[in-house]
Image (cartoon, rainbow, N blue to C red):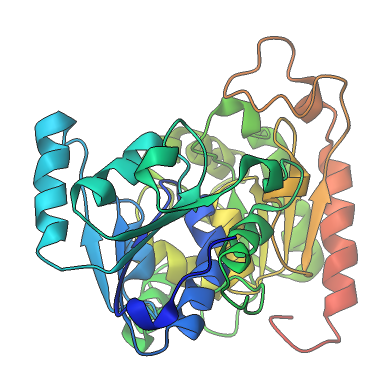
Length: 355
C-alpha cells in the first residue's frame, strides 16, 4: 500500500465515470474524498451527461466538462484537455474509470499524484495503483470505490448515495406537474421503462402499463413516465395502454429536471438503469427488474428497494442485446412486480420517509 500524503494535496481532480448510474454510485466515494481533504479545492472532470449531476453538489467546488465528440475529440483533443487541466496546477488526480484514456490525460497534464485501479495496461501512468488482485468482481460497485480509497489510506465515509437539487428546481418541477394536474399532495408513482445500456435490460411496455394501472388503482396514485430522448417510443406505448391516464415526461426533461422529478416520486418502478440509482440517492422506494445484469454489483444501494428477477442459466450475461429469447426478462410477470411493490409500499406506509 502507498498512502496518500493528505497534506500534499490542496487541489484535487476527480475523473468521473461516464454513465449516470455509475456516477451516482461514486457519490459515497466523492464524499469520502471531501471528508479526508476538508480544506482542498475539489474539481470534478466529467462528460456532458454527468456534469449536471454535480452542478451543484456539496463538496465539489468546480466541474470541468470534457466533450470527446467536440473540442476534446481524438489525440489533439486530449492534448488540448491536458493543457487546460495543467493550468489548474492539480496536486492529485483520482480516477474512478478503469480506462487507459482516463489515466492518460492526467498524466499528460503533469499532475504529480495519480491514483486509480491497475487495469487496461495503464499502470505506468499511475503513481498509486490499486492492485488487480484486490478488485472483487462480485462486490457492489459502491463498495469497490470506497475500498480503493481505503487502500490508499483514506478513511471511508458512510456508504450512502447522495444527490441534491435546489429549492428553485423543486419549485419549477412542482409547477410543471401542477400544469399536468398533479398537486403537491398527490401520491406519484414513477415508471421508468428505459435503460440506456441496451434493450436486453428493458422489461416490456405492456407489463409496465399493467403494473402502473393496478398500483395506481390500489394506492390512488398518479402515474408519471420518465425517460430520455431515445426512450420516447416505449413511453408513448405505455401512455396509450394506460388510455392517457398518466403524465408522460419521457424525453421532456433535462438531467436536472429529471433529478427533481424522481425526487418528487413517492414510489418508482424501473429497470436496472441510471434513474434507478437516482431514486435510491433520494431515498425513493422502488422495485427494480433485473435480467442480464448482475444485481450483486449494480443494484440500488439502499434498504428501500426490492429486486425482482428470475434466474436463467445464461444470466447475468451483461450483453446489450439478447442473442436468444430474452428469457431472463420474459419470465418476470407483471403480477410479481405488482405484489413486490405493494408489499414494500404497505410495509413502509407506517414508517417515516416518502410514504
